[in-house]
Length: 341
Ligand code: NAD
Ligand code: UFG
Image 1: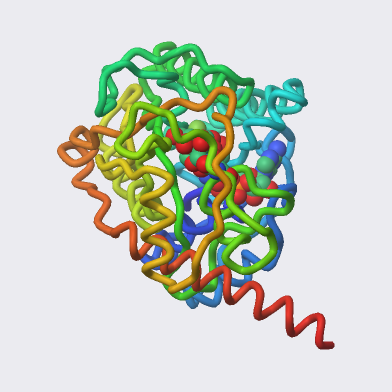
Image 2: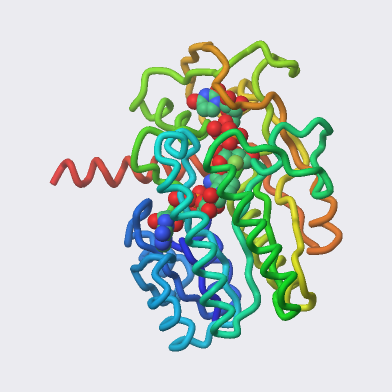
C-alpha cells in the first residue's frame, strides 16, 4: 500500500488516481487545508475504486505512527505542503513548520516503522536562477529567494542526510517544473481557494469572466517576446512520473534526483495565444511590471528521467489548456447549479 500525503490536493489526487488505476492500494492523508473531501469522491468515481482516506496532519507524529502500524504501507509519496510563494514571504514560520516540519516528522515516523521508500514533491525553484539552460540535475541548487523555496531545499537536504545515515533508505526527489492542466475527464483539477498566483489558474478565471484581465508580469525579459518562459507540463504526465519513480526506487538505494519537465519552454504570450486558439476565448491583457523574484527563463533537461525512469512527458500544451478549460467549465457548471438551488 502507498501512503500519499496531500493526496486530496491538485497533484496528489492525480497521483492517487494513477496508482488506483494500476490496482495499487492507496491511503491518502490530508488535513484538507487547501483541498476538499469532494476530491476523494472524484478520485473514487474515476478509478472505480475508493482510496482509504484519513483527514489529519502530516506533522502529527502519533497519527503517522498509527497509520504506518495499522496499514501495510511500504512506500510514501509526500505531496502535503503549502505552496504559495507570496504567502510564504508573509508567513514564513507557517511555511517552515508545515513544509520542513512535515518532512521531518514523516521521515522520523517512517524510520521508526521501517518504511524506507519515499518520493518527495520538490520543485525547480531549488535551482534558483540557473545560468545554464536547459537545467539538469547536476546544476547547483541556488539560493531560493523566498521561504517556500527555502523550505523545499531544506526538506531535500534533510532527506539527503537521512539517506546517508542509513543505507536502507531509497528516496526520490522529484523537481517539478510547471504543472498545469487537469484530468481529461474534466472531473479532477486545481481548485484555488483564494486569488490564484500562478499563470494558468488566473488565466482560467479571466476566461470565465471572474476577473477582468490577465496581468502579464514584464515584457522586457531577454526572451523571444519579452515575457517569462516556463516549462509547463501536464499534471497527468507528472502523476505518471511518480509511478515510474517509485518503480525505479524499489530497485535502488540512496537519494535520486529527477527533473520532471517536458524540456520545452513557452512564454506567457505563447500560452495565452495557445489558450485563445484552443478555446476561442479572447483574453484581455494588461502589461505590467516584472513580478519580484521572477526569473526570465526556466526549462528542464528531462534526459535523466527519460533514461532512468523510462518516463517522458507526452501531452501537448494544447491538451494541457483544453483539459484545464474543461475542468474550469465543469466547476462553474456546478456553481451555477448550486446557485440555482
Ligand atoms: P495543493 O495545495 O493542491 O495540495 C497540497 C495538499 O496538501 C492539499 O490537499 C493540502 O490540504 C495538503 N496539506 C497541506 N498541509 C498539510 C499538512 N500539514 N498535513 C496534511 N496535509 C496537508 O498543492 P499541489 O499543487 O498539489 O502541490 C503538491 C506538492 O507539490 C506541494 O508540496 C508543492 O509544494 C509541490 N509543488 C507544486 C508545484 C505546483 O506548481 N503546483 C510545483 C512544484 C512543487
Ligand atoms: N505570470 C504572469 N501573470 C500572472 C501569473 C504569472 O505574467 O498572473 C507569469 C510569471 O511572471 C512567469 C510565468 O507567468 O513568467 C509563470 O508564473 P507562475 O506563477 O505560474 O509559475 P512560476 O514559474 O513563477 O512558479 C511555479 C510555482 C512554484 C514552483 C515553480 C517551479 O509557483 O512554486 O513553478 O518552476 F517552484
